[in-house]
Image (cartoon, rainbow over all chains, first blue to last red):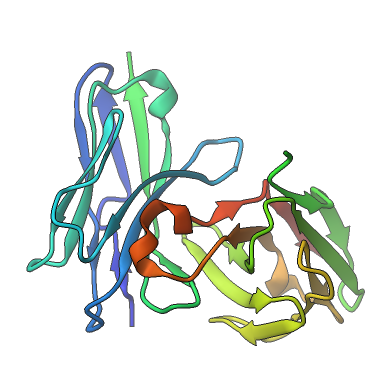
Length: 114
Length: 118
C-alpha cells in the first residue's frame, strides 16, 4: 500500500510567489519522521527539511517551511518567494523504523516562471 | 570532505552481464542504503546496511546483492542484468537511527548511477 501520497504531479508558479506542495502519509507508528528532498534536473537529491512526529512546532529552513498537520497526516511543503532555481522535482519521504529506511512519494514537478 | 560518492556515473550493460556499483562515504556514517529511481516514481529501497558486515533487504531486493566489508563502502551487485533493472541508482548514508535526533539523521545521497541494460 502506498504510504506517501503526493497528489500534484506538476505545478507552475510565478517567481516571487509562494507555492505549497501537498504530502499525505499513512502510518500507525507513533514515532516517525518526514522529509522533503529536492531533485533538480542535474539529478542529485538535496535534503530540504525534516519534521519529527513529536515536534511541537512546524519545521522551517530559510524559505522552506513544513505545514505539519498530524491528525490529518499531512506534511505540506511551503516554498516562499519562489526563485527560478527552485524549478525541480520535490519528493516527500517518511521514515518509520529505527533503521532509517525511507519511503518516498512519486514527487511533484515544480516549474518557476519569470 | 567528499560526502557520498558513487562509481560509475553511467553504465550500459547487455542482458546477462554482471557489474558492481560502488558507494563510498567519508562521514563515518553507520547506515547505508541503495535505492533505485524509475521514471514517474519516487525512490525505492533495494538493500540497506546498519553497520559493517551487516546487510538487509529492502522493498525491491530481487536480482541484487550487496556487501559492506568496510564501514565506508557499500557495494551493489547485479549478477545477471535484466532490462527491468534499467534505472538510476542512488546510494545514501546516515549517522544514526534515532528518529528523535531530527535532521541529524538525514540521509545524504550520492550523485546517482544511470544504468541501462540492453
